[in-house]
Length: 292
Length: 266
Image (tube, rainbow over all chains, first blue to last red; front, side, top):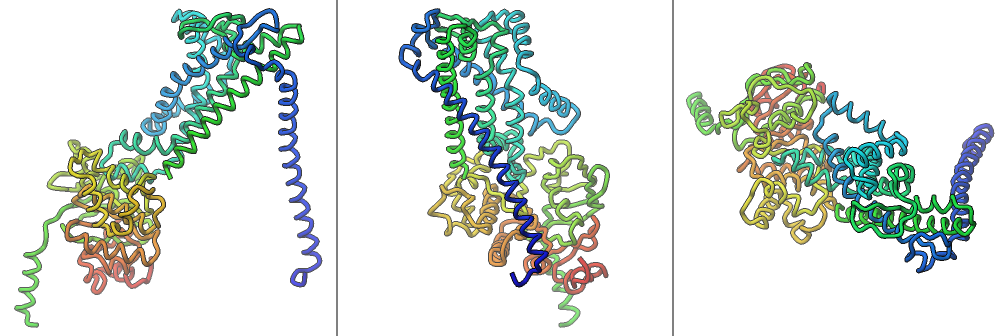
C-alpha cells in the first residue's frame, strides 16, 4: 500500500473489521429465527404427519382420536375466508381509494385516517365482543358463519385499508396528470390507471390480511363458533367451526393422541396459508407482467 | 427599402395575423394567497408557437398549467383575472374543467406514458371521450403526426415503457394529439431528453403548428429562439416582455429581457 500511510491503513482495517462484525451479527439473528421456525416445523411435523390421512380429512370431530377428523373445521375455515373476502375486499379497496383519491386533506380525512390506524391496533378479542353485541345479538344473525365472517372483516379492514392506501400512494402523480390532461374525470383516471397500477400492492395487503383472519381464534370463540360440529355448514346462516378453534380444542384435551391431532391440524392450517400466499404471489406477478 | 414599402409590409403582416385562441387578461395565480403569477396579459395566436422563458421559479410552468386548469389539482391555488378561450372564461362557474382539458392538451416535463401498450396509450383518451370513428386509423394518424409511427408500427401491443425516453415523449405528444386539441401546452418537453431526441421533437413542433396552437415552456433560450414565433419573458411572476421571437432576441424593448437573453443572469 504505497499510496496510504500506515496509520490510514490501520484505520481502514479497523473499519473493515467493524463492518464484518456487524454483518455477522445480522446474519446470526436472521439464521436464529429461521432455525427456531425450522425446529417448530419439525416438531409439528414429527407429531402430526402420521395422522394426516384421508380419514383425517374426511371425518368429523370425535371423542375417539382414531375417528376424529378435521372435515368440518376445514370446510368452515374455507367458508369463512370466502365470506370475509367478499365483505372486506370491496369495502377495503373502496375506502382506500376514497381516502387517497377523493377525500382531500381536510379535517374529516385526517380524523378517519387516525381512527383507522387506531383500529388496526385494537386487540382481536375486542372485535369479538363487538361482533357478539352487533352481529350475533343486535342483528340476530345468531352464532353463524356470517356473524363470524363479518366480525373477521371488521378485524382486517384497517389492515386492508392501510395497505391499499400505501399501494395507491405509490402510483406516480404523473400518471394521474397524464390521464386528467386527456379530459378524463377523476373517477375514470382512478379506475383505468390508479387502480390497475396499485393492484399488485393492494392484493398483497388483502392476502396478508386474510391470512391473519384464518389464524385468529379469539373473536370466533367469543361470537360462539362451536368446538364440536359434526356436520357441514350448508349456507352462511349455519353454525360452524374453524381450524384454529378445532386445534385449540384438541390441544386443551388431556390425551396425548389429541395433541398429535392438533399438530396435524396445524399442518393443514399452514398448508392453507401457504397456498393463499402462493396465490397472492401468482396474481401479483401476473398483473406486474401485464403492466410492464 | 423605402418607407412606403416598409409600411406596406407591416400592414400585410397585420392582415395575415391569425386570431387569438387564448386571451389572458390580468391573470394572477396564487398559492395559498401568495402570488406566483402576477397580472399577466397576453394573447396566444392560432397556429403559432409561443414560448415562455425565464429563470427557474419565475412562474412560467404555473402559468402554463393554469391554461388548462391542471392547477385545480394543487391544494390552495386560486386564479384571478380571465383566460378567454372561444370567448368563454376558462374559470367561469359554468365551465367544466374536464371539457377544458379535453380541448387544451398537455405534454409534461418527464415523459409519462401509461404503463400499458403503445396502442392503448393513444386509444384510451379518445375512447373515454366517446370517440366513435376507427380507432386503428386514429392511432396510426396520431403516431404519424408525432413522427413515431415508423418506429413502432410493428409493436403496437408492446408496453410503452419499453420505448426510449425520446420515443416515450413523442408517444405522449401523439397521445395528446389523438384528442385533436385546439391548443397543445408543453411544459419543458425536452428537458429530460438527449440532444438528438430534442431536435426530433423540435422538428416535430414545426410541423405541428400548421394544425395546432402550441405554448411551450422552456428554460433553454436557444430552443425558444429556434422554434417559437412569439416569446414571453417572465421573471418573479411578472411577464416582463412579450413579442415576436426575433424582436425579443435581437432588439428587446426592456433592459431586463436583454440581460436575460444575452445570458447575463438566469
